[in-house]
Image (cartoon, rainbow, N blue to C red; front, side, top):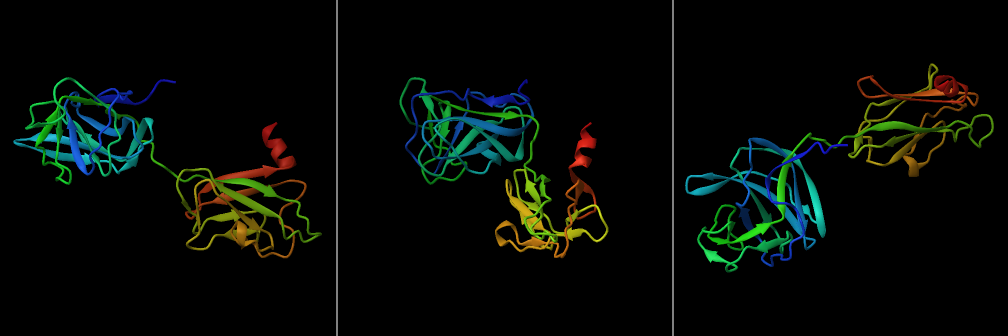
Length: 275
């Protein structure tokens, strides 16, 4: 499948042989400005050290460099890294790719001849002093850093709750209080289940989650027929008779607005649905 993202500025995020030792300072790499007006959705770096990196986009404004937007700090791992921007940055053609190191350096770079550090901004990469403000650029060096920015579809993290399973034949005889329906959050962020409802396909067989109920990403919660299990959420219909028909039934999940989110059929009902 073709990559839906495109690089719009910066340098190839490839292995280079050198890494910085300074900390708490800002840099701008002017080698390849952003080519077109763009909404930046991610940036990439090749790191030689596992340290935090923060993207900063700059714009030349008269005699200074103004900050257009920043990412959150990301913990780089050694090698290639691609970081999504939670808040995309609207950039213009000519804007410059910069970054901030809260601690020691991470991004690989190479020298393009000359000395390591010069007073003034006559070379391709600009530096602030350690502890300097975000636009206090007083040094430069002939370098190229392995950092680039791109744009593409914004894939925002979301919650996605499904009916994971129905344990319809409990070990308890007749009343089967240990039956349960299991819900799982297969999304990437926590889900608010306040007011969500599980319906067991017959009148009086509704369970509504109380206010403040949340389900973390990649976690499962159970709603038992008449059994208290704090380790799986502690939820129960509180009904003293079996709910789930051993011969086949369907579970329904509704959100707080009453919209159907998911269904789960088993037994003959499930078979007929797939024939």
